[in-house]
Amino acid sequence: MKTAQIILAIMASATLLTCNQTKEKSSDIKQETRSIFPKGKKGPVENFTGNAFNTPLVETDSVYNTVVGNVYFEPGARSNWHTHPAGQILIITDGVGYHQIEGKPIETIKKGDVVKCPPNVRHWHGASADVGLQQLYVVPNTEKGIVNWQEPVTDEQYSANNLKK
Image 1 (cartoon, rainbow, N blue to C red):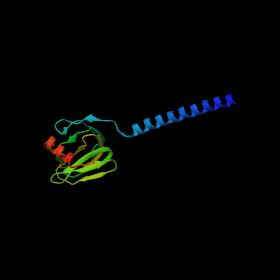
Image 2 (image 1 turned 180 degrees about the vertical axis):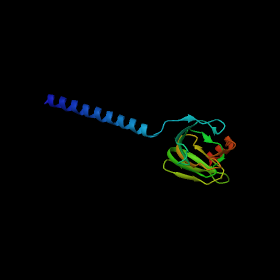
Image 3 (image 1 turned 30 degrees about the vertical axis):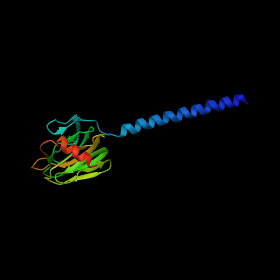
Image 4 (image 1 turned 90 degrees about the vertical axis):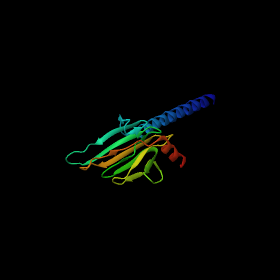
């Protein structure tokens, strides 16, 4: 009887260990799929406040006149105010952030959201203060260019927007 109890205890322990290892592997896999692209190159301080990393995915060429890439914004990082002559589409793939068109209220953006930035409309986007943001961008390249960078979003503008959450 005691032998059966010992064997049962060993089997139960082995089962728990196996389940725990499977759970750890699942967590590792889930962590890896948060960002399917490399972190990329740090964006220039002239265009970003905080750390933003860009990974170009599709460069413009003679066939495709559209630029596609991934940007990771660390918490608190954001773009400067800017415009796009042909507009921009953002596809949020992870995290939480903000997007604002000049003169309009800030919008909270999160995983699964799609943001359309109209042509030549001043806007900015970036991570929330506490959570980073991953976004894919799609920008048509026209004879007028891709982006016109402007001044930084001030800490006051960003903080005031965070208070409106």
